[in-house]
Image (cartoon, rainbow, N blue to C red; front, side):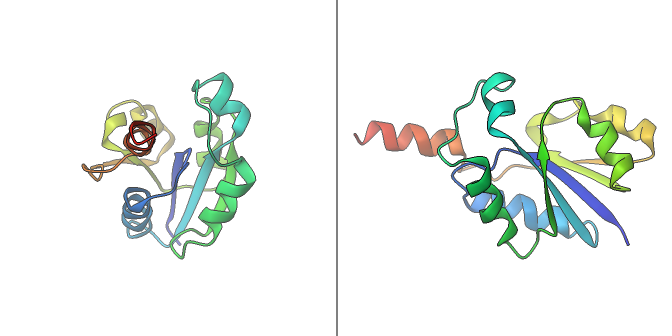
Length: 132
């Protein structure tokens, strides 16, 4: 069984997220999503989410491409997760290109997928704020 992992906040879930998850799942048999916790988003990423961790987790668990959702509590856990979950392929959007190449040293393939260009959570928030 080929295991794939990806990481993210997945707030205001949209079709760009679904595209990423669909393409990530196509690279293997089992997709793990490491979902950024509220505290990690607030403290390390300087983000405030619209939906709580539990709400975002519930949404991700309902997507057919996702097999397991785990908490992402820090930047440094990626190397540990690769070993703990026996991950074969690490997937991120191409806005992160090169940032996680160190995982290749762990025997893990690293893939950066193109983002869906016309959609982002940031853009959705900006559009909603401009309509107020």
